[in-house]
Amino acid sequence: MAFGATGTGTTDDSNAFINTWKAACGAVSSSPVILIPQGKTFLLKPIWFQGPCKSPIQVQVKGKLLALPNLGSWKGLDIHEWLAFSQVQGLIIDGQGQGQIDGQGYNWWKACSNALRISNCVNVRLSGLKHFNSQRNHISIDGCNDVIVSGLHIFAPEQSPNTDGIDIAGSTNIQVMNSVIQTGDDCIAINTLCSNINITGVTCGPGHGISVGSLGMNGEVAKVEGIYVQNCTFTGSTNGARIKTWQGGAGYARHIIFDDITLINTDNPIIIDQYYCPNCVNQTSAVQISDVSYSRIRGTSATPTAISLMCSQTQGCTDIRLMHIKITSAHSSEPTSSKCINAHGKYTDSIPKVDCLLP
Image: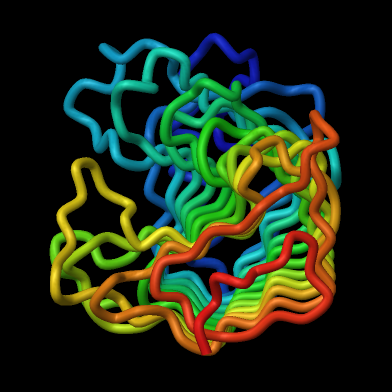
């Protein structure tokens, strides 16, 4: 407000935010704070908050950030991101359980704009925010190291297209914890060049599950390893623990753990899909999937096939391990089942049995 914002929700406050950022980024004092006050609503155009800055910055979001809803108002602006933070070290964004970010994406779900993007940043803390109706991905994290995301509630209608909750790419040492994600696409998607990603205590659904991928599109060489998904719940989601790759890709996805997962009326609870493409034609190259563990997964499946391990016919998946699995039908007394293509590994104590696994 000190830099001229009105906080009425009807007047464009973008310039006030830009000037506030310039002052905070250039401040030599330790840990300057940008306060977005409670009870105010700020209407904003796309803004790029560019670093590097002279000190770590804390952004306290106690009020509401609102995107311009009219597509015509974005003419001449970058429509790929709404709010983007880039090359900032020691960034804290804290909603303290009351701050809201509303992308007003209803008119944008045929377009492609990410609501909040954090790129090429180090030592980021994002917590206590409510995100609504992003134009596309609610939160995109790319090219970052040491990011902790916690206490978020992300919501978009089940039928809203491409509204991923959190999309992670080219990043390492990322933690997502204790959050509720309800969207029209992946609750969390982990893309190429990612390592040491920890996801704990996330409730997903509706949505398309927690996904490694998609990987390998247009011959991409994927590099993904060290993915840990633990103590998560899927409720009415179209997938649960998912790995998805395109035919014709290369590289690897390995050292992946899904552990302590609860399923409630979930389609495709455990799924590896190496045919994630329209009109797939089997090709000689594929992303190599290996060292994947599924353990302590229990609950109900909305589909008869609870475990689907559809691996490349040429590469196959190796060292797939399932243990202490109990997935029953959500809608009938009929037993659930499993199916495989060229999947190698072993299972113990599993309902359904996974006899289609090859040695």
